[in-house]
Length: 252
Image 1 (cartoon, rainbow, N blue to C red):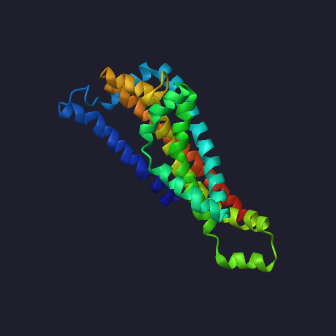
Image 2 (tube, one colour):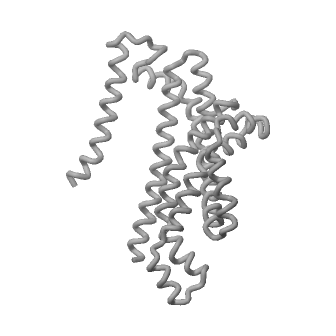
Image 3 (cartoon, rainbow, N blue to C red):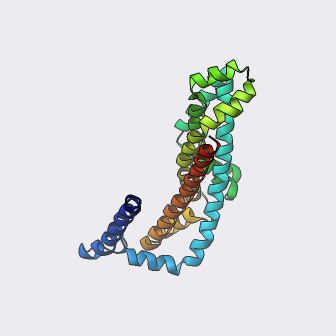
């Protein structure tokens, strides 16, 4: 119990120290407020703009969740196809790696031209940022099934589908969850990048607009909200992973 309390208290203490330094150092070092506002000024700016921040948080969250869900479904499908077919492994896998190597920020203006300033271009950016970790982690999980268990299923004359559904998928689930945990914050980044390039709403647009007006306090307030959004969504994936683990133990 004490050890668990310490695990919770340690990161909270670190956050408290960082926030305290943020509050007092700008004044102590005579840093101009437009360069680095005190934490209390950031909170004040966020409270003043709470209506806009709340509306834009919902818009960005929707873009992130849609992009992530598409990336999760697409990544799982790609991994299964690549794992199950030698031809697709030789063709799709290099394309997947090449897609990951593309500078996605440079693609954002094209998406705005093709899909406009609305939801579609932001969802597509979130999708592209999040796709690769889900696909690669799932592929590694499918390939990591213990050989002796595969031999056991073959000895039982299990069909290929039964082996996949009852052996490979359960063993791949932890890797799938890990890939989703990496992908979720990347989906947030993708949506924000899309809003930077072309949007008339969303937290990314607000950050860019505030920065152009030297409203550094509002920039930091928006960034804090983006950080909280990433942290909460990551926590949801972490919780789902633990539920899967608990169910696996109960079934065992």
